[in-house]
Image 1 (tube, one colour):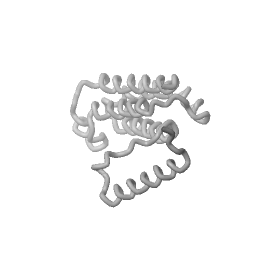
Image 2 (cartoon, rainbow, N blue to C red; image 1 turned 120 degrees about the vertical axis):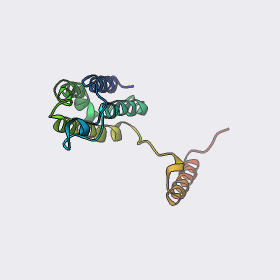
Image 3 (tube, one colour; image 1 turned 180 degrees about the vertical axis):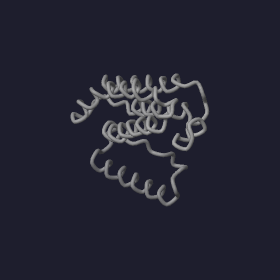
Image 4 (spheres, rainbow, N blue to C red; image 1 turned 60 degrees about the vertical axis):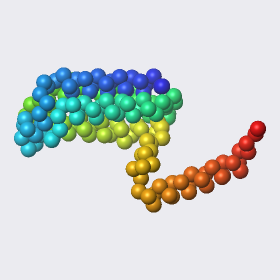
Length: 155
């Protein structure tokens, strides 16, 4: 995997660990802080960062698009800012704002990064609606036929 991507994954793993450690309770933030807290707990929040790291690793990207290099180089610093300044606010009356900042940052990273470094994860065939599954199979068959015409098999 690309070194910059691995550094991002390590920063995300550290962020997930910090979210777990910052608060010892497993109640939801709504239960602890009222309506302005999210109805999720610290483990749910940590999984958002760790799942993003796992999804980045799953792409097994070796090359990073040139237009992402500067962003990727700065991303571990940004994640560290989130870890050091935002995460400590989560177990407090500032939980609503802290969680919103955390979620917005990680969603932005996911939306920007994953489509550019690898294929999107496809759902299991069994989870697709029947009509869509038929269309996928027809498209796959047509692609295989076109590929066979362009690249003849050599035996």
